[in-house]
Length: 224
Image (cartoon, rainbow, N blue to C red; front, top):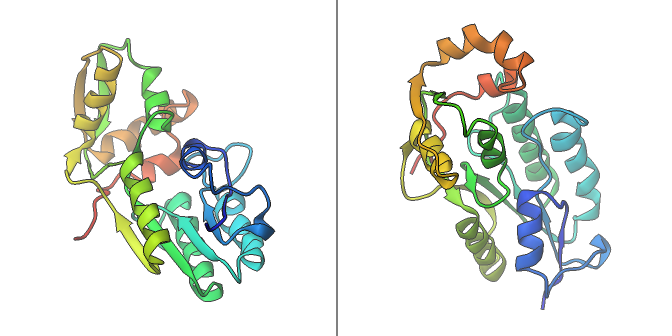
């Protein structure tokens, strides 16, 4: 059985470690497959550059003779105004240039227990009125993402893969689904990106939305 090393203990990393518990190794040197789940949505203790680019730069020499499964993000694009999407694209480029056996998986929003969106919206579960950005998303469950990773390993798939769920929905519908988990049904108003640009100074100070999150307000759906 192939040995698997997973690079982080975050939301996705923890789930995958439990899923692959019988095949895990704590030593990257002993691994046949490395799954990189390191990434941040907001800059705090670490920057996007450190977490997405520098980490991959340091990882590459350790995976030259292994299979690297790299979890990136749907919509990543070099020179995107969002630092998150720009650095995700830079990391992908580094892997393509320096790793022979790789699979880059680019999921839309991943849904599952411990997901950051759930935690952030829980703070507002008692608010009677919520504003949601007017955009479309195509969320995928963590179970389906994991099933695809299983397939990548089993069939030794290589290359770049966009990964989405079956349904394209509005961010408003996604917010409603999350609030219903808490038994809440607030009024949710869809607002255009311009609204959040005006409100950004307040939202930023309140810790509700960063400038980079504002720059990511755009449809996040698969092409196919």
